[in-house]
View (cartoon, rainbow, N blue to C red):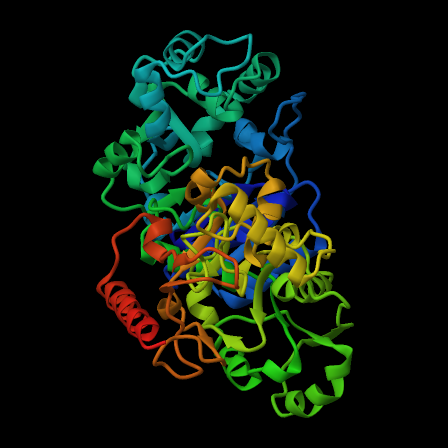
Length: 572
């Protein structure tokens, strides 16, 4: 292979960022040219065996990918929030003596174009090709004080950038997450010692990025299109800054930022969202698990197993939680499906089932979660329901729980559906970090009646869903003011329409539709039990949470639901 066909790029991050590195690498390789060799120089001073195996697995999957493992040479006495690995760029002139040119990439990127196009940028007369940090440049112009909490530096970005960094124009400040280095020229400038000393003594807010901006002179920089480093960090989809940013960039060739935390916000379009979900699913470090719970009498294993086999990715464990009395009944059913990685977990039936069987759910799901790691992605499903796992997977988000609009009640505060959940193991563990309820079903019914009468409520305040949700939100110190329910729920939940994820129930649950059909949201007035207020039941829909317009499909199902419920209640 010709030297011109080798694309040398580097990443420097520890094992904690390894899974995000995998997403970046897969996205990069999915957009690579098969005629090129993409050689990664990976800096890690404490490489774990799992991470090394995962990287080598990628090398086996993508034949145009090679990897060289490197230990950083940099010596820095810096005690700030960044690790030594994050400062390798400061010593770039010495870290890769065998190369004349390298493309540095942060781990928190998603690549949407072939990086060979960027790598082949002519920088023979420059030390580096860089991209303006649009956010920081806006902060400089507006004299923003974000992150400037160090007593050694100026009070706002305008003063800091001009007085400390020596930057004359705000647009000259570049982001260090994507840099194409001319290593021969960097060696001739001999900047490493000065930059390291600056970081050690000044402790600049953005560490190596600030040091690079201070010491690489403007004449040594070649500024290229914003699309090669579209930085989502610190952006909010409703902000003026975001709208101005989108006007500058038609589309991202590289998206930069902690996208895994807010992939489902309006910042990303549906195509980017699906792409990201695909990269996560393809990562050798991703673990996906499924918990199925419920009594044998209601099981719908035929449909569930079909959806399992149709799932594009691999379930590392399918955890079936059953009552001890159901083991023999399940034996004959399960043998006919021959599913890999099936784990059987048993529990006793609790003596007190709690309000609407909440204790049964808590006991079984907690037992299943004992086999779950915090970083696992977990589907929790009742055994009499089914869902298209592929369609749900597209909504992956590390900091939010995904559920359905079926029984996610709008008329009751803090009442997302608990029948189907999807999220990281750490979140589901918090959701079910709750003791079994000591009060019986009848005792809770009576308590609801008393609270409603005393406070003149038009909804029942205690339900299995609200018990679980409020307990979960208390982990994050949320003020459970019912008037702010929707805004709080939006921070932690994604509500998906049942018709968009093929969510079905073995039981008949929608008027004039038989069993095994799409479950429709509720629109009716009824008293849940004698003595309770008459509730005007209605459910949230996907558009309520994403704050987007309803699709024609949504409008059809919602209107059909309202019509059928109205007709059904009239005929009661």
